Structure formats: C-alpha cells, structure tokens
Length: 133
Image 1 (tube, one colour):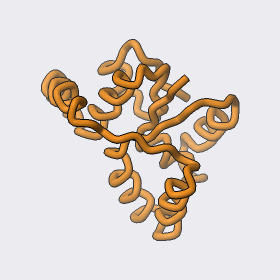
Image 2 (cartoon, helix red, strand yellow):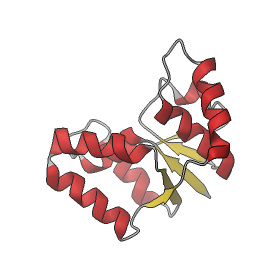
Image 3 (cartoon, rainbow, N blue to C red):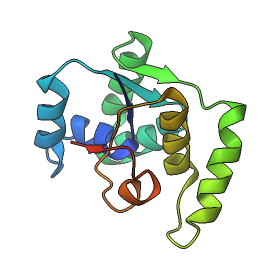
Image 4 (cartoon, rainbow, N blue to C red):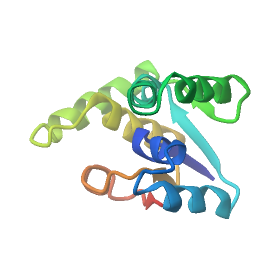
C-alpha cells in the first residue's frame, strides 16, 4: 500500500508547533505504510525547513533521506504529460508543478492515498485518492 507524501505533511511532521503536527504524527505511527516522496517535493521542503526551522532541521531531513528513513521516488519523463495537463486544467488555482507532480506520481504508482495537509488542491485534482491524515 503506497502513500505519496506532499510537502505540507512532511513539514508538519518536522515542526512541533505546526497546527497539523499531531494529526500527521498520529497518522504516521498508526499503521505501517510505504510512504514515498517525489523528488520534486525535496527542494520545496528543504527551503521551508531551512527558512522556518533552521539549518539543522534541513540537515536532519537530508540525513533521513540518506539513511532511507524516507524513500524518494523520481519524477519521470513519462509523468510530464500528466503534470502539464493537470497544471493546465487547474490553472485557475493556480496549481504548482510540485502539487501536479505529486498527483502524477501517485497515479503512476497506483497509490492508495496522498499524505497532505492541503485540503484545497488535492481533493479536487485527485478525487479518487483519499487525502490523509
């Protein structure tokens, strides 16, 4: 059972003061799941960690990737048509490349959920994928 993680949920997991922290943490420890992170999420998350929590938080995330606490999955060339189509379809949001790539990767991997705090975009652009937590 694959779950694709978005930036907001991963940030909330790291920031104890985030309004979503406890919900994401509870979801994370509730049951074993295979959570993957699209490579497109990494720069966005690192920037948030660096600017809001500091260099040590960013370094801890990079270390967690290196030690395979988090599993990265590449955004592939074959995901690009779906990413572009999704961005065009939801240009009125606007929808970011990162959000569109999360959806494309989730669809390609046949994920069962998207782990996100974003209740604005994902329920609308990926209505067949539940958004956790």
